[in-house]
Image (cartoon, rainbow, N blue to C red; front, side, top):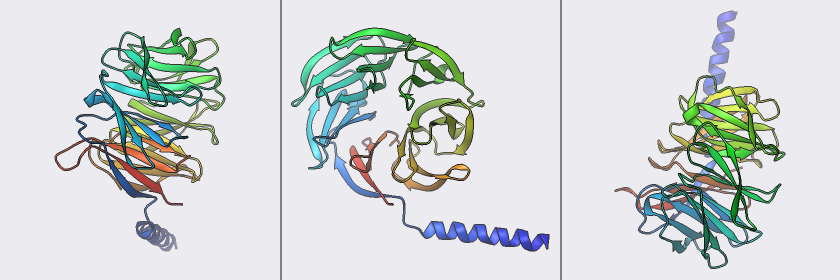
Amino acid sequence: MKRVTMWAALVGMLLTAAGRAQDPPPLVLEAKVPLGAVAGRIDHFAFDADRQLLFVAELGNNSVGIVDLKERKVLRRLTGLSEPQGVAYRPATSTLYVANAGDGSVRLFQGPDFTAAGRIDLGDDADNIRIDSWRNRIVVGYGKGALAVIDPASRRKVADIPLKGHPESFQFDETGSRIFANVPDARQIAVVDVGSGAQISTLDTAGASSNFPMAVDAEEHRLLVAFRSPAKLMVFATRTGKLEGSFDACRDADDVFVDPRRRRLYVSCGEGVIDVFARSTIGYERIARIPTIAGARTSLFVPASDRLYVGVRATAAEPAAIWVFRPRS
């Protein structure tokens, strides 16, 4: 009887896998928007919902491309930058913020034509940028271990939050009262109390390292962190910091995003794939691996346009472009 039960379970698993293999993919490549003569690595994106503009940090090209998503073409290019990494757009003032790794500056560009509107010198390796909508501030990771807090009115740095190493991706929790920050050099996920401006704890990474991308699932009160060594997606409870699950993921992850409408996650990886996870009874389950191209690590999912945008650097086989993926329900 036991053998019959095991055999039935195995057959059921095989039938489920076969059925899933025949299902339509959860992401469909809808378009490739050429970026033109852009060389080298492409880093992070920002989005202007009102005008459907995508801002692309073209790190290897020392520029930021402004892509008109309605017309699917490059509208213009901001040049003369120094290894731009992080970009953020603040709709209230139509201001684009660009963090530069090369000279440690944050450059400001004013819409609607995005003319140069000043700079804030942080000193070293300016990286990811987040808008703090709760306190009307701009937060930038930089240097050997700090988050700079910028007042958009005075356009000056008004505070520093020290960390134990250079911060990669960082996110506000669903209440805006804490920041979770990946600090891979210190093998940490730092927890920062925004009110006091101090790190208050760390999350247990269970021995994993090279934690670069993260996202917050506000509806589920979960923090999602992708590690490169080993290639794992780890899920933490935002309220308690408890590790709730660990799942195999693609290699060289650089971005992870939540699709709240479909209760999915998208993880873009340099190995040339996007891993799609769905919420399940065990936390999350990988339901698809969508091919892209080697080195296409950075992405941005925009719920307002219901599209996932992936940055593809120029190779001998492919020109530099933004690949546009449409989710299937």
